[in-house]
Image 1: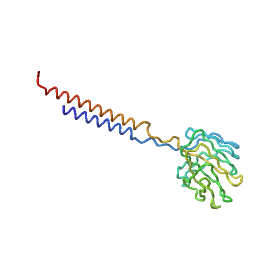
Image 2: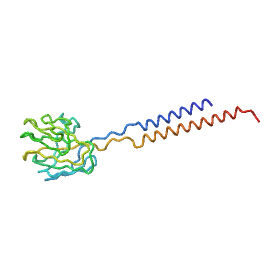
Image 3: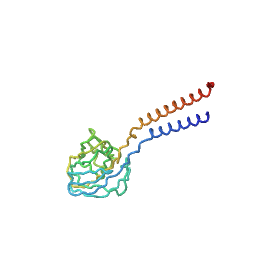
Image 4: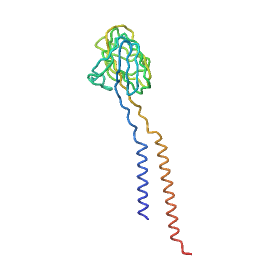
Length: 227
């Protein structure tokens, strides 16, 4: 009898441990992927990001190219040395629209130009994720060049974005490159993990109470005098 009770306790502890492991297991982390560009011509471009389609309108002389996004300026989420990217004339004022919200969006600037201390104004809040050493964020939405030397190379980050617009305060036909990366999915806790744990523990406690009552009943019956 004592051996059986010990085995029951061990089984109960194992079940509780298993329930705790299921309830407390970390959710799968969201993976970051680069844009898959499908077309770019004239004033428009399109592609997908982690299965979410997007379109860009308002471009000037758009076309597809490759860019080296492997350097330290892109350390927030580096790409390859020949990453597929979008090339367009820097006089473009464009709007990007996603078919579904992107939890974390990285916007890559490759050879963006700081002539005339250019301002790149975003319609959504941005933060510098890496690079952009010759710029500063003004008012939470404007990427402003601070000197004329070199190019603007780096990554800015937007969160929970469905669309945004970029406008700039100068006009030039020189080309610059753009790319996106973002989370393919949002990390969320396992649904209903706490209720499952609660029900499981409650069931084990009830089972142990019933088992204990049965044991006490048998002990009482065995110790009663014969009638």
